[in-house]
Length: 287
Length: 177
Ligand SMILES: Cc1cc2nc3c(=O)[nH]c(=O)nc-3n(C[C@H](O)[C@H](O)[C@H](O)COP(=O)(O)OP(=O)(O)OC[C@H]3O[C@@H](n4cnc5c(N)ncnc54)[C@H](O)[C@@H]3O)c2cc1C
Ligand code: FES
Ligand code: FES
Image: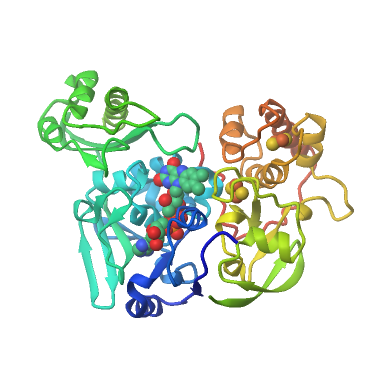
């Protein structure tokens, strides 16, 4: 048996899970889809006394359209996120991103909340949450709180959840008519984590851009927005955009990582190309 | 360290097993039930050799703890052949098209492809490549495997399938464009 020994607990309600987290704190770890945590345990890079399995808590697995948001429970499987009609209609960026996550066997277990809490800098969902200004709802023994993606993603594999807290759900704002979205990524093999990628949303009213969001993944220690460029894009005529130029501008402020998969400058070139492709796809869809 | 008694159904048979919390589903199937057709290549989610169906969905059995399968229906490679022992369409196609050499990866491929074809009865070549991307083979170079999937799809289309997978199966094999 590869993982170190632990006590296994499978609460069947959120209240029981929160109570267990409250009493074990730093000695406990929550298990979602296990597609990142179990490998880490198998390599003994993580050990703890109590494993709290969230898979038997139905109240964490839901998709609800509430007012201007689609709210998704943390334990909603990636397979459901990718095929849910409410999500496809209202938050198509999530649907689009899901196809790039691993393989269908991974998506059958992996969850939205697990992917966000794991905070891999090259993962798709964190960038989508960042692009859409999602709100993450955390719950712990002292109550609940809601944070922005900027507050949530602290760095590589690090989110702001305290030891006694868990991610309960995430609200994704619905952009409405006139919007277009695209996720583009480069990976050497289908299903690999991205060498670089980008999630883009554009909204156009009367031919003029009135909202823009560009979030890169694999290009920094956490997902990162191209905020200055987004502000510049608003007010421009969608038809007049020079996508190549905009793509180059989008990466100008980044210092992408240098590793065995790609040098920093190659990542920057790939990022510019992907951004230009994503923007032109999104604009086409919006107009 | 905790121990748990689980009740589950494996290949249609009820099983009761005592396991330590940290024992993976793959280890339980192999060591406790002696179903050694489920292979372990990497034991961290990369190779797909350990793929089984849990409540109809293809998953990595090295990334689930056995105790998590309590109450579930599990199908392993040993449960894929027809009740009379005849090979399934996918298994025959692998033999026909040289979809295997050493055979180490084969159980994972077969189980994955059964599930993939349930969701994609008429896949394009691109669908097939995407569908098998979660399984690694070190011998065949994949061309034979791709041919086998194509042939299995044709055979299945020509012979009406008994859709024995549970209705509530969470399978997203549909998603991967
Ligand atoms: C072969 C392979 C390929 C993959 N490819 C990709 C890819 O291309 N893109 C991608 O994004 N991902 C990829 N993944 C990872 C996959 O998406 C994981 O499912 C995901 O990163 C983690 O989700 P999980 O539900 O499995 O979480 P787990 O592995 O169970 O947990 C991950 C971490 O998050 C914590 N956690 C989980 N849920 C909560 C919660 N509700 N509140 C607080 N903390 C929580 C856990 O304690 C743990 O630290 C891949 C995985 C594999 C094995
Ligand atoms: S042994 Fe499970 S994926 Fe390799
Ligand atoms: S047949 Fe040898 S690994 Fe695939």
